[in-house]
Length: 118
Image 1 (cartoon, helix red, strand yellow):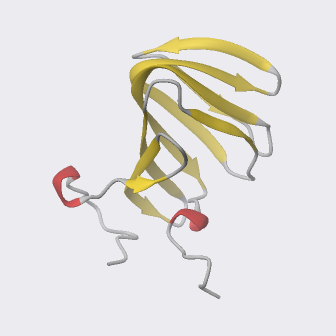
Image 2: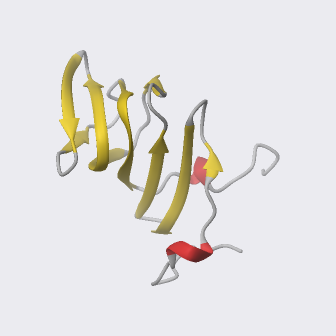
């Protein structure tokens, strides 16, 4: 079911999807302009360095992460947050199992379309 533009998302109705080795994600709520995603990391899991044209704001909901943005790395704990500018190379290394809450603008269409979609 396409949840785009739905005003509410109930966590119990959402499934964790694979997003890399030791990493899963739940797409929470979204519309064309914005998307919120919960990303769960097992201890030691890595979010490889990458870039995208979206602005990303993230909250460390739980756990401990080493976050690198444009070559600068900081250790962040629950309650800390960070912002990634468009096209900046960034990545995450999980130190203690935890969850990031990511917000993207505009939405990440690649998160809701399959590779076979036109």
